[in-house]
Length: 95
Image (tube, rainbow, N blue to C red; front, side):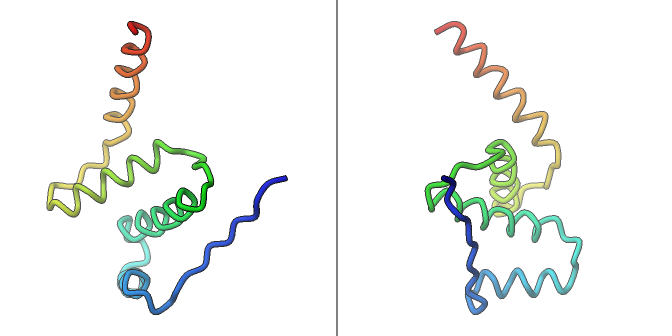
């Protein structure tokens, strides 16, 4: 029996208010989309659920960390993550 997932949002939360403001300015803002999905994914994790695609979660975290650090945004995290996972697989074979 699978647990039901309900995502409740507090509309007066400062994060939610800022996301709403930014989405009203630009409804196609990729950062806003990433933030919304990250909020949902972190809610899943903190509630004990598993993520369907953990690598997408990691890519979003990397983009947000880069943005927070003021680094130039790069949308090529897919290739970087696959290189890391390939090297980890090779390391597992050696062990």
